[in-house]
Length: 171
Length: 235
Image (tube, rainbow over all chains, first blue to last red; front, side, top):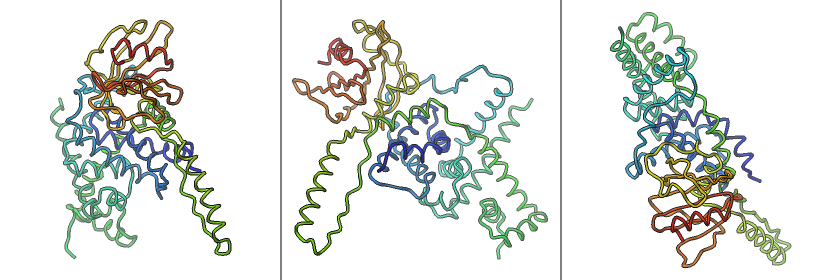
């Protein structure tokens, strides 16, 4: 018999993966967490009606991508934009190393969001979720060659954008 | 074959080349500046992207667990009855009775709409489920209940603003306001004149009204929830 324990045992190890994807599909951290919740709710509904994926990761990635697209379409119906959520506030006391890491991550994150959507999505699925090119092709419904080109060009653009940004802020 | 550094580097880094092609390309890269640049830039980009990986926060893990616990109960797969030819009509009758019984059991299972399941889960995980809002609460005091804070988020695609209230004993009531109606909870009973409903889901008392604005109240204590509804003029 299907149970929520079985579902959780199989899908919760992929929470980091879904969270990392959601952070690339929704700009604000809180929106990304809402997207993770929606992904798991959709997955649970499918699981409850008998769906059993061969591999959990690409399955959750597909659900997350679709839910993210739906949310982007609904974005205009948002009640308001949370001004306080624009900046990622530190949870704990920052040490210098952590502060530098945060600046670095913010810089890379900004550069990633500057890429065309297809490249950002392909990079998120391949480099952050660890899916293979064939899996990314299936998740996005694009030919494998196209996926490889998007990832490759996206990575090059990301490296260039970050290098330019670093040069601009160099003393 | 045409020399295409971009395509070759992309296939190489994605692990798409066979062992011999891979060896050949690695030897080629050492002598080809264009291919070297392609591989180097893509590797740099990949390392930068990978540096964004982070572990999901603990509160999110708890929120997901609570969401699943409060979400619709799993449905059983349909029973496949293979009817031996010799048993004929008798077996068919027995199978129908068994299947009917199973369907009746299934029909009694508490299946909650996703937005209701998410609302219950978010109540359990508390303030971590919401992010900041500047929308003021409809009232700062509802009898003994004092306003403690507000937040906003989405419940399975339904945008909501949440206002949390607490009484001196520490008992909470959460008011959710949405732009469109909440789905009705399974097992809800309608209150006269029929525009509101109440339900108990996972031990929580729920009160829902469509007017003056779609509102859902949740709390551990039913009397507190109903008192809050009355103060808000939702009855």
